[in-house]
Image (cartoon, rainbow, N blue to C red; front, side):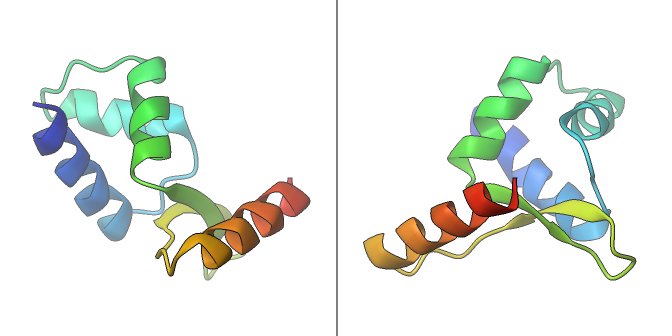
Length: 83
């Protein structure tokens, strides 16, 4: 179930500009997944999702590609700096 849910999360964020965990949870519930905010939060962390600026300037979730430990550290520092 977790794998299916996480695959669907990737599809959802690729097809929609999802700005919040609540919005993502709502989309999942509409599709029959029983999720809590904590579940969505864990999935976001495990999938390495981060908020990035969309074409309209609003933040949306996207998958950050991983290029190894140095790249992961750089991404984390940049992400923390933007917060």
